[in-house]
Image (cartoon, rainbow, N blue to C red):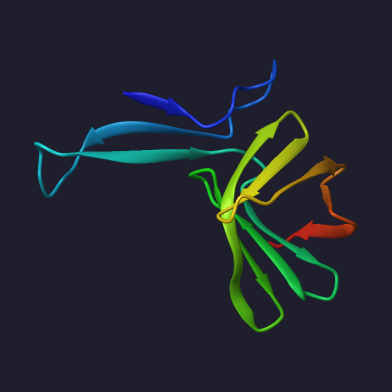
Length: 112
């Protein structure tokens, strides 16, 4: 079984693909194994106040200051464009340009 969270653009990897494999502890159960998109990972503002963790399963977790998980939701990536839908239904988007994420007036950099 293969599930894709976002359709790939020609020449680009899909956002995340889940491939079911046998679970080592229970061979009768399948466990998804994620292959990550190059943009998955942690993105932070220069001051570190805003932190977006783009998880390989198509979910995100945003921290603001000392508040962990201030916002959570799903995201899809098409080419260099990202669309967010938080768990309350609020939507936002952004663009990846030269290794930088521009989102809602913020500039976020990949954290290594």
